[in-house]
Length: 59
Length: 448
Image (cartoon, rainbow over all chains, first blue to last red; front, top):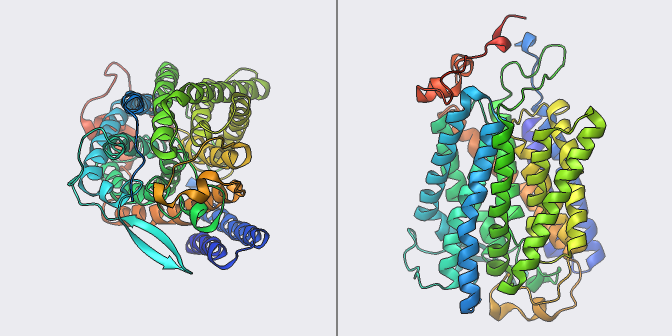
């Protein structure tokens, strides 16, 4: 889950880069950038959840 | 490509502002010490000093050569006919840099302080458990690679700054005082370090409770806030002059905006904690103060004082709730509140520039011969440029800094031994306590 989270962060960033290069029309570009950020948000949630600490009695 | 020229008055004013920046480092170091435990106080101050030293040297060796300055030669990738400046190609060891009071030499001076400031931020998160040598190695990587790379994109005429010229997205990604390259970068490194280190022993119990481990000296923390204000006025003013082309006469408004944002943020944090807990909380108010300073950094030169108050107020609220949310829900044990204050506060500041920014003068964030569109335009979409910068911080800088530190942790473990944590970092790593008359507390190591 940890690796997946970071991969999604990277994937979201690549979507943002792609939006800059591929779309000239501002609305499409903005929509694509927002999609990339949504993917990053999912990746961030996964990264946070994968770092929740095991309880000390479970160690 | 020529770098922006500075008048004599602006050069002198800029030098003065740059020499204020170390006060911000002193303020952050004191805050980190005060928010940690008494048995690690000396260690934290020692780590702060070492971080400043390592960061300065690493930046001198290769950091500046990757970062460069506006108009410096860089490695360019051409995509769909547009040039993307990815990294500078200056010589190592400041060679070919003439110390003649030019914008280039002032940039080098400013950056050598800024990189130290960025290096101090993760120390607050790793308090009470991050080994000294490991923190020095991590700082070296930050100063030699992570910081220069991103700072080049923003402050060295890199691809983020070029978004306006190349694609007509606002004036490109803007950040006058280092909200992104110093604060968010430092805050995200703090998050990575916290994840790698794990929480302090006794922080999260089996029943899901997270008992507060209060800082040991509120006076140090609050005094650090005052020092930080002095440093931030220098940071925001010098950054605005060097990286956005502001005149020295604009420093009055920048100083006012910095002060107002910090004030509004601190009072909002004090009010929220008073309403929720019955009494204002000193450490959260201090975090609110610094969070307001952080939030003011990006937009200090482009917003009105009233907007600075609004930006600060929102920062104070967001940071207060973020600290609680990260600690209790996400189990991020961050004694200094660095992640919330610097990363969350910085991101809000960057977005606020996109929302509130007004551009009544040319913005010189790229080389002057490639400016016509950005200077005169009626270009819109600054919010999108800011959003792209934030996406780059989260999508590229966070994974990068996490991987780099994780790799380092594999070869040189970050975390001190259980015995060291029990004993305190002062005794374990330095051989002497900061407060020798104090006894060591061991309550959290008792069997439950």
